[in-house]
Image (cartoon, rainbow, N blue to C red):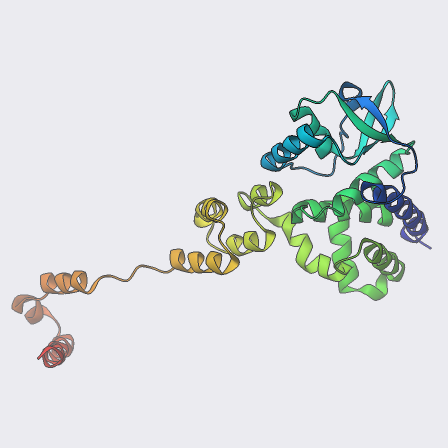
Length: 299
């Protein structure tokens, strides 16, 4: 049995424990009674899987907290003389914006190993997670399951997809992991998720900020590089649909046809008895036939 196989059951247990904790964020029973802590004693997770917090959504939540308070406690763990956020950083940030001095918390003793898994899982359960954050979160869990560095996981997944019979235990545990996470299957993740890592700027930044849907970013990425910045900027500003993105790409790639009047003026400048006489015999005969046909069409 390889390291992946030995690691799989351990991760399964961690996920089950993580899911029992993240259930508190809704209606599940809390493992400990909520209490109130000064915000100054609470510190964010330095390895927070979530990269982007939408400023407008934070401001809206801050307004709600100012009026109604924090309705669901965040989870923290002891860290020296302070408490480190396990999940709930968005509520923590909004509470600071709202001018709150305290925040309701559930204090839970969580190991470093559990800490990373719980934080990642909680983020993956959020509806507003963008595709880039979702992919990096799943890669974090896969790295733990496969006993690999995160950077090594994409290539290994592609190998598994190409030759599943060569990695039977890896495939089995990966399938179990995705079954626990719910949603897409791991093969679909390889095909449709991993390409987000190859996105170049400015598409990557727009996806990471949650401003541009991943599907639209992929469409723009296939357009000429000279159009990328313009297309991203307008797609975000105007809220283009996928159909509109495709249409705009086609419009910008297609050369503008010359107006009929412009073509006629160009032809007049070039036509003269001397110019026709200077042509070789065959070309002159063809030009005369075309002029005659044009005369008949216009008559």
